[in-house]
Image 1 (cartoon, helix red, strand yellow):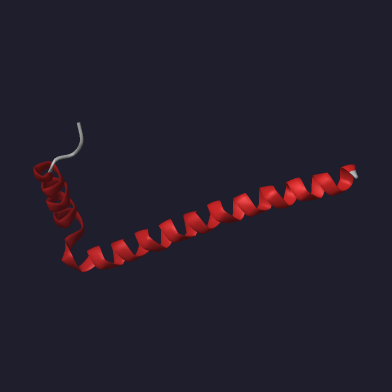
Image 2 (spheres, helix red, strand yellow):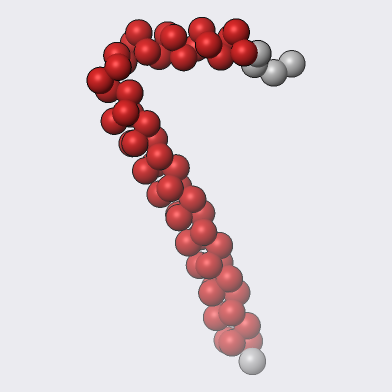
Length: 61
């Protein structure tokens, strides 16, 4: 059971009422920046762990 169109429409209407038309673009921009920073952090964590594995392999030799 997923969210249907009608439920999504109600959620968007409530968000519009709570934040108003003026704040929605700024809210969406901040959300986009947060997601981009999260993805960048996750990619950095992957490269950090692979670098740590390479360093450990170098120490064992």
